[in-house]
Image 1 (cartoon, rainbow, N blue to C red):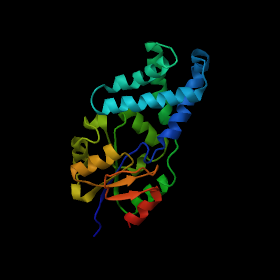
Image 2 (spheres, rainbow, N blue to C red):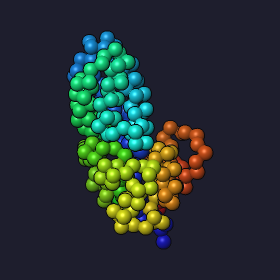
Image 3 (cartoon, helix red, strand yellow):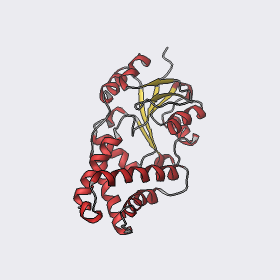
Length: 233
């Protein structure tokens, strides 16, 4: 008998190519608002500053220090401040528009749809556990045409918890009416996905797209999604 019946995927950086899609979306935003004229800079320096502040504020959000709304606009505000622009209204406008543009992007990692199709045909129950925002994440999976693969999509907003907290994993397996021993988490984030799953008592697969070095011991490690075929036969 197969060991796992329920497979829980992370979305951003695991299936949906966040970095590629974010760069395209931010580039469109930069042009739409003619930010080059406002900040007297090309797109790349602006985008690099944004990525830096986004990473810092996401960590603060995940640790409960700021709200989701604060995260959304403050990452834009902090980026503009790097260019001597202190405009809260503009920051909130940029944030709202960016969250409209971003989930329309469709780039997923190589072999994403092929592996989801393979696993579905093998009768595995597929689900998502994501720390992203409910409305945004649903748009991403629908526009990428992968929504039909998943039975349940668990977001931090719908579960009122966030990876790596045990509550979101507990919420997910209860939603799927599953037993933890029948489940496995598949994701790229060593803290949220891998350590979170291990601490909860769930097996996990580290999708190491960037070949990171870690002392954490996942149940499995892969570098490409196609390698999941070797695990789930």
